[in-house]
Image (cartoon, rainbow, N blue to C red; front, top):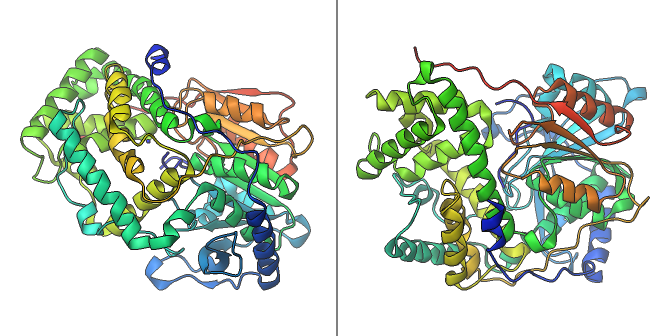
Length: 519
């Protein structure tokens, strides 16, 4: 999964043939971890958080305050090694009588930070919520300054250009297998015994310690994308600690889909969203000149890709960077005009917009490598993965025939999990009993490809009393606070009053982007 934005700023017949032996879900967490979480939460409640200036190197405004929360590396041993999580906060701007506590946000990943989230309180869409709540962000374990995880040298991670074959040859696959093995070994070498403790279950436990450190008897939480998954784990583990929860763009929590099948489903769904982008570009042929049909747009894209495979754009953009840039268009339609312009200009002989949009940034290489390391560790640790590459090869070759855009990209991103050096967990069977959880709100875009809509339906089924708000016909990943007045109205009303719609509700999609170009 990739990060879902809070505001505008990753065929069924084929899938039925894809197989992986599912992990058996376990009935609950070990008692030692449950006791350890209670011990850590009690300590955090007593210690609180000493909020002060944020680190200078972060270059954050003075209105944002930062602090640290101590959590056990291993919840089975709460008196063992400890790590610290970085937390940020902007205090509620309203009067004390109207304050409702802290609202904690996680944007997804795994591997993403919400340290800057509290700054959203200055935006008009969030001012009313910011008057009632302390807005709280944090860097989960492994992320940023929170016991940071690294699996390779950031400079090597930012190596350019890179290749990304749509239909890899046997030689391509052997090369990627070698890279995946080396990457997994790098994670083990750098993290040592700590590597196995980067998990979604520990992210949920950390969230409960954070709740206690904030002085909150119950948690008000909003999670997007992957944040919905460990938010659902939290609701399962600590239902009595939940005050209000918003799940934006929900991961399918079915333990049989975590994470191998989830990535296969995402690759298939991204192909449908890519078709939406090509249809939009074709409808604006007068602006971009890329073809009047989706098929013509695809041919032009393929031709540019072939040229870049032979000669990287500007010496920096290979097919790997090219594909990653255009995958953004399948994630967020805010990218549609930018990417269409870049493709159009390249075909006219001007590669500069494409180079600017697709080149990796050396300045952000350390953070980008850290995010990838945490993503890999969490997904590999969370669940069993096929260890025989023949299974990956069979499943992804079959899927790529119908969904070529992201299938092998996803496969090679996750391939270190086939060679992972630490024990894998069995996913928790997410769910609560009727009446065990307060009403919660689920937000979803009907054509979201990063976390396909079926995941929102499955999460609603597993959390009795949950209400689903759907942005019909829309496909941008992350819908809460993204500018749809209908969706944002439901979100704001729930956070401020705790009221959900009486039944599932629909909102019309926001208008598609305007077509603009360098001309």
